[in-house]
Image (cartoon, rainbow, N blue to C red):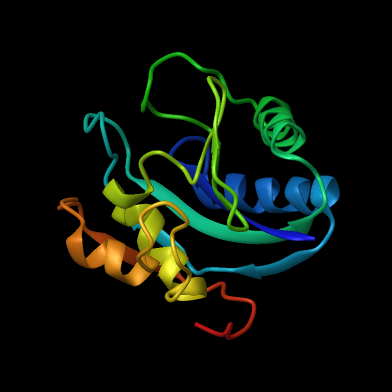
Length: 169
């Protein structure tokens, strides 16, 4: 079983509700939800002229391969009404795969670890809440160290504490 770190985000149609719906669908698709971060609020990254985002990291365990994990996350996005109109634009739901255990994958469809993780505090901060000391399998530094050198200047603030339990960090 691999730990899969998923970042869920929304800034349309009651984002808090969308995160809750995504969590339920993820539990249905993957089964074992082992941890989740608090919900964080941040300005939109990439395209700033849109509503603020709510983001959360969920950790599930699965024996699925990377292609199946990607298919499941995209299926959930479609089920919840995601439309891919504009890169980094407003969306009902977004599910990014941050890590699949310590795997390194680089295909046209999928980059694991997530290609922009080191540039996005809205991913790093909730991730650190769960796994501060997790070693990025390419950069060989911890999530905490990635945040320390991040150039992202967008404020990330806690929206609501949702954490399941204290993980080993």
